[in-house]
Length: 156
Image (cartoon, rainbow, N blue to C red):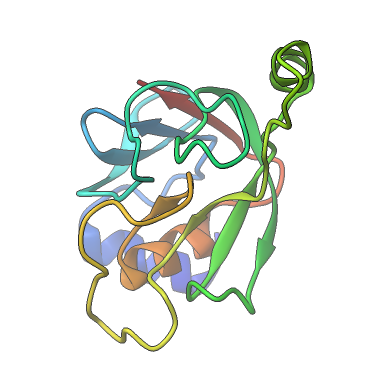
């Protein structure tokens, strides 16, 4: 584990174990980092979603956050939202669902921080277009601990 991640782990009181999976609980408004045994390592609360926070994302522009099993596939250190980790939505099933309705499934779903220029402040309410927003300090910790290829489960 990188030294920065060890320092963060000690500061927040977790074991510093490697993050094996990320779980997003939309209704509970939290992101949980899990170890290989499924035990919580760290819980982040008060996440922000899109303007239609309930129900799964089906189409581009619906303001919803996807639900399902995806992967963190890359990070963007030059994000307009401090730091961001891309979620592999849409998968084949998401694309097929949207295509059957003659619509696009959307994409560009990220775990990210607050808009650049906000400093330590948070944008009010649910303001993303379907992404999962956290405090900048929280996405910094997640950025250090979650690598490309990490599974992410997004549940209602």
